[in-house]
Image (cartoon, rainbow, N blue to C red; front, top):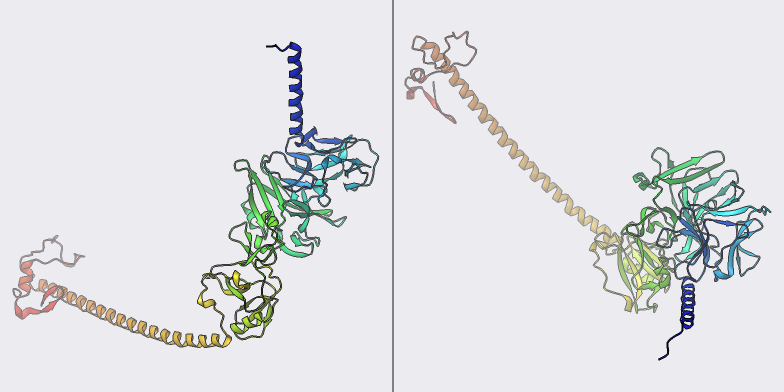
Length: 566
């Protein structure tokens, strides 16, 4: 058996070392690689998985891809938060596919993103060009990306706090520039995995009040904060701000600008203010214990956002978060979007309608009906149902003292309740195979004609009025009997009182008549009658003498306290 030479052993170890090094390089090739502490200087750039990290390690800047999306963006995210949470995106509407062929660098004094080594920027700070050789960009521990003069850091050309996306960090401003008439906006993401500009934005009131508004499609107002109250440090429509022990809110207004800002009482707390893709503004704090974001307050409620669940969707606000679901007989149009909490696409029928006798109606008890019904001058529920059946585009009807029909998509249906709390019935048109046994509906919710309603009211009054007078008469008789008994009892009490007074008077006279007899008063203190200030006590002998030894001729009668003598 041949032994390996020392040279063969060294060669084997060298190959092993190179193999381990190569494997390590491949495994780490997808990880972010930090090229500098917190600064990108003129001549430097970020590409691939390169990043910079703020000095205190709070934030990181580089290329990222949200969730399962294949698109890449330049953005800033929390370094110390385990769940990827992006707070700012540069190229939100122009994603790239390969970060290794793109770079984030300087061009003509601007910070730009170049794709495929092109000289045409995908994204830029869009400043007037300058030829300074000391320009640099620094990522602060507050999450603010600042483009400045490296030789004089007080000279700032641009920062991302003036150009937020969907997130507003502590120390940032959200307001209105009175000199340039520019309004800062928070604009939601399109969905959980798409940072493109969404349908909702939050902005201050450009007319000069201290209010903030949430708009849909930049035009339809869906929520307003109400005026700022400086004494309570709250907006009228956000009472949750009173329960504040984390945030220090401030509203500033002067001749140059008006803005809302906030800071943290405890700088170690990680917090953010965001407008999400459903149109809600939320104040959140990170919990290291649960490794999740905790909701501090949110406005408006999910179901207050118009059409949040899309066509044929139902919004269920059973808790502070709320949720979307499809109406019975419908399924999500895009299950993928719904899994990402984006239900704006709404729902579609599980089975198409036949537009005939094969279709039916599923009664849904509810406390509110969807918007934009068509009203019809029909006097009964059956006629209302027939009117809907006669039109293939009619998807539902309701009869609540008048006939309401819904053609086309049903939008903003925002509650399905049990029949116990429902006030009306919404009859949804479905294919016969999709009609399930409905929940029991209270008889008070069964649609009836107007004439039947009037007849029912007459019957109710015919029952209520006689019952009322009968009860009133019985109560009057009971009250009269009670007063009679009370008066009789008072009369007897007065008669007994007079009898006792008569006995006392007779005894006193008897004492005066037999004054020469032996004094048997056991409480006699030797004073005369005029000197005594108390009722005199008489002995048995004195009483026997006064009543002729309790003789029958002296007996007046008997009362509640026994025989009475004179």
